[in-house]
Image 1 (cartoon, one colour):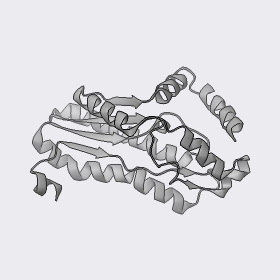
Image 2 (image 1 turned 120 degrees about the vertical axis):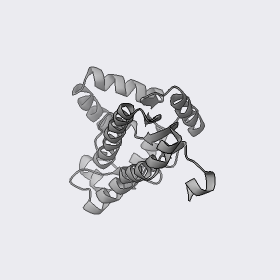
Image 3 (image 1 turned 180 degrees about the vertical axis):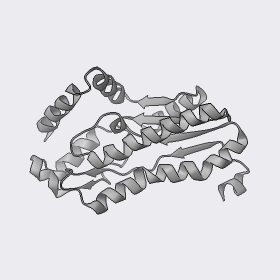
Length: 201
């Protein structure tokens, strides 16, 4: 319908995302299937459905939204981490295939830090967090406080990255700092994250 209405498709933004706060043990299979279905399969479906039409333009871009959590793992975010790491791998592999084909189409993997959206307030929070001494309600409040970047600024940076044909975009100082930290200390960042999580609870 989109192609019929507009004649062609040049840009696709795969941006569906939900959050799940839970321990690995406490996460139900249903909750994990729910988050994988939206966060990962949503990107897969959007990419595969539109890729043939974008290739027809020989001048298009697929923009897939991963997350800072597609670069660093965090306690209580195993489901979310898994989906965002998957989006990263999927998109980076796609980009390389498109480079080999030289079809005029490209892809961008976006790793936002805290963007001011309703993702925290709409998140599913499991009672299993209590086993880590965490309160689900307080966890949502703490999560929401970290969402500082206006969505309009995120959109501006994404479009700029598309024009520059970048492979990866990190949005926000939080994303850039934590990405650099995990590169320098690939195991040490996990210990640091554990300490911060304990302090915030």
